[in-house]
Image (cartoon, rainbow, N blue to C red; front, side):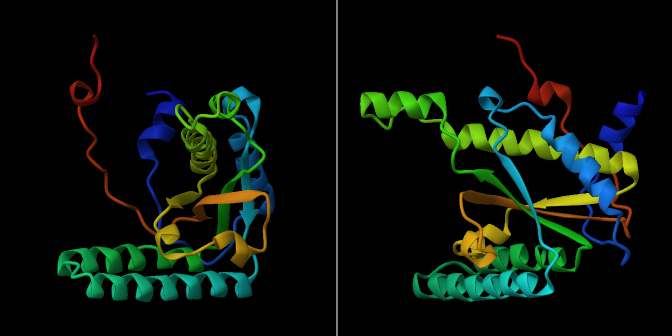
Length: 210
């Protein structure tokens, strides 16, 4: 097994961290690794916003609470099942740990990015074929993979969270950022847990030739 194989095999999503914060230099090294990822037309649209302010974290947490209550109320009014309400509460509870993480990022993409399909659609006055969001999702995923693996090499753990965006309305306004669309949150720190091995699908389940 190569060093890279070991990093990939041992990486886990970490939700419990020790109190001490990693060196800022390490975090910047991880960001630099993320920046090396491929992106559409080398647009490099991914942005990392580190949330150091306790006040800002509290505002986000409150937005999550308000969103959960709003969604639960809507489910009650529309006859949503108990199972669905339990899922909603579960996603909320499993997201709260991020506010205690030593390092927390809001990860977004620049609104200046315009994909080729979007340019073509504008020229043809058609919405068909736009892949802007697909392109941006791929760019974020590729960047975060580099970040995660570099963190694993340094002995840090991370977890990517999209569930909080289910609850928050316009997180960009809460963070007072413009020109960026928030696409996920990212927690990082020294692991304080050792998650068990997660069984992966067999290659026969995910690979085929046609």
